[in-house]
Length: 335
Ligand code: ASP
Image 1 (cartoon, helix red, strand yellow):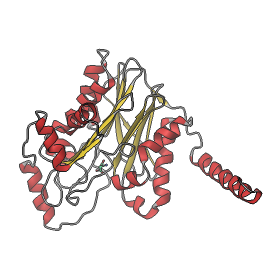
Image 2: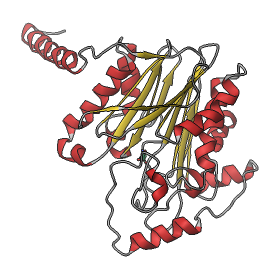
Image 3: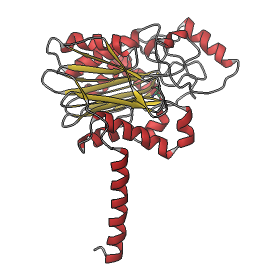
Image 4: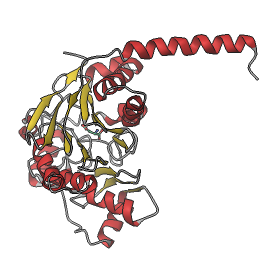
């Protein structure tokens, strides 16, 4: 039983927390809203990825099929060095891919640090649908993919190899802030970014996908937020979904996407929830946060969506029956 003193202390603590939360979550503005079906994705390359998802959604298809098809587009893009087959390698020259997927029933699948397989998102889906597990990592993930008919192939492209050898000259691990605004095509200068995608189908069911090659030049075996359910991606068919991009370590430390969904569950708009999650990262590690990028993107079951990032330059793409190539500049803490 609580004694009186403990009770007073607890009441004061929860009052303080409420004020803090209220302050962070002060109503921003009317949320942006889309008709259903809709798909939203991180970064400029989300526009092309959304097309893949839209080809399924527009025919009344399932959100899960849509996000898988959408995520496969940047995974196959030879100019995209932060997702899929042309992704930059780790410090030792290995291309290791991370991805996860989650459906409207709370089923999820994931692969982490997987080598030699070009479409990690499809392997993640198979893990979800064909195994009793959620996550397969490293050689085990590759083995599972090969056993299920995926091609085992070398992923390090000549371009990526060249960039890696250039990096080896200094071998400094310094994540750049953004790879946005199509500059990701410029090569070695930029070294991360993930496609996080959320779709609501015509039935109003939600699914999400997240896929990346992670931070370029990372330590071999490093896994970021992107394949971790709750960190890089989380969906809940009662509430909505969220996904993240940027330096995954800070997202994992704060279980970012789960936090955004839980804030939406409490009644906050997607935009407000993303903002609160970003501010929590900044509050915990202000010095680190000044130098890195983290962005969240979220949508609720009504089709309201929003995003927020630490740094300027985060973009996201929205696609629905009204417009298929909308690209929006996300708001940020630092301007
Ligand atoms: N979140 C990814 C990771 O940490 C990278 C990114 O989105 O920029 O692996």
